[in-house]
Length: 180
Image 1 (cartoon, rainbow, N blue to C red):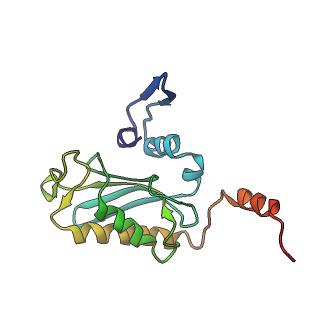
Image 2: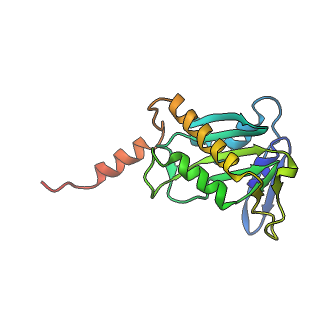
């Protein structure tokens, strides 16, 4: 999924006897990333996502982040990419959590696919053998960019809530008897 998100212009097809088949078609054009995000993260996410595009001191942040009411119980739907490389970095995950801190319960996790473009000399990718962790020369700049861009995007949506999930919650409540 991470590789497919990083390269929306490439078709990914995986099948085998031990797993269900996946086929992510190549997307092109202006909406290629949104198309791939929808393929991988689902239509519910793209319906509840806010586009992110911010630049600070030659560091660019793009991608999509869900409104605060569209969240998950775990961090499996949080994707970060640095210069096209999928990473799973604690500093980046912490910045994402901090950006949503005022909007979301601390037991819930935001959903996002965020792409950082930075001068390769400003980031060290040789921190971990799997290249999953990175270190920025100016970590505060990157953290500030993520938090600022996400908070601005959430503020621009007003108090928009998720368009999905309400029916399931109401159905669950309808099945439970209430004590009188």
